[in-house]
View 1 (cartoon, one colour):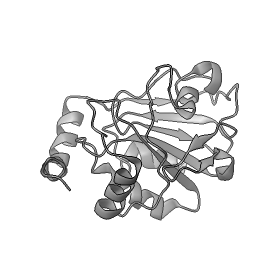
View 2 (cartoon, one colour):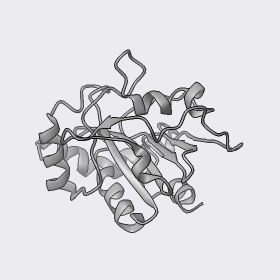
View 3 (cartoon, one colour):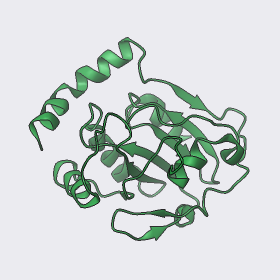
Length: 196
């Protein structure tokens, strides 16, 4: 861990507390009407950080939590909570991290460096995708294009607003929730959605 990463990890509890107090990065959007997608998310290819191409079809009948991540962010310590969530609910929930350098260039590392950082510092065992663009640009990752386009997912237009935004897809491939960065992986809102 770099000095910056150690400092951010130390201040993480204060960052979360300040965000909640000031209502920053705490938005939760819910698919209250259970709107079904117009396009299936299961057939969209994406590349893992090891170069293997996969689709989400392998995770049918599980909830899927998709997170855009970065190694040098005030929220990077959420890898710890995400790993605990994955270990506790791996029978029913799949997590996939999508590293991105879109926000203040907080993910400059290569895919190998990102994987090593996650494993060494947080013991991450859930899949990491290849670093990609998660915001609405011409080369946006196809998974995030689906997540942030209501013509595809059925209701949500919300692109990530910062690192560690989270999207929850249910067992039938319906996008059910969007959680902004300050919503913690083991927090009340997330746990309620995971257990529903």
